[in-house]
Amino acid sequence: MREQLAQFKADGIKRIVALRGDLPSGYGGFGEFRYASELVAFIRDETGSHFHIEVGAYPEMHPQARNPQADLQAYVTKVKAGADVALTQYFFNADAYFRFVDEATAAGATIPVIPGIMPITNSTQLMRFSDACGAEIPRWIRTRLEGFGDDKASIQAFGLDVVTALCEQLRAAGVPGLHFYTMNQSATVLAICQRLGV
Image (cartoon, rainbow, N blue to C red; front, side, top):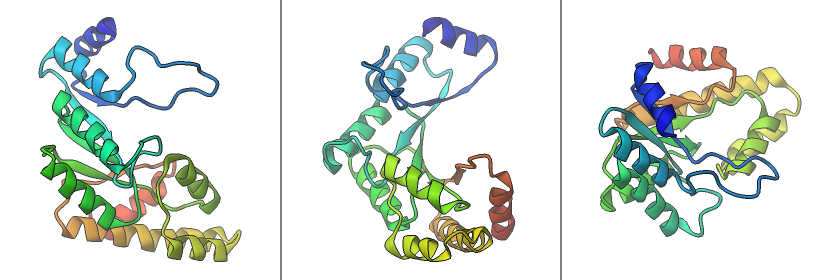
């Protein structure tokens, strides 16, 4: 890892997204770092303030967390290890984001938290991803998506309306930015940005 960080510096890289990541299927153990906080601390110890470090955050709780308090503490530990900014897992309930930011701030984690936004383009894929990562799809959204069946055009039109409205609500509240999970669907993200006037 030291060699990789040195190479990143030599290549002029200034930003790192430090995630523990998911273990490959069938992989028996962890690599060099068990938690993202250990990776953040290592980067800071090795390189000081050279890198701008971004970490993950889970407004609706990491699926492997024991409970919400443990999840919040894991996040605070990443921040105290030296993170500059957090990027959240995607969500469709803005209140979950606002609650998370309030609780993190109260716990002393005051870095900017950029909301993660997942465009809705494929309901089957969205539900599979959401089940795997613990992102909640509100019942009203799930019901509407199921009602469209295989009508891709209706799913995409509905998704565009829902996600644009979420972004508008977040921007009106003064979030520090938006992080889009494009999933190779850049046209949808561009359409959302056009609707937002950005």
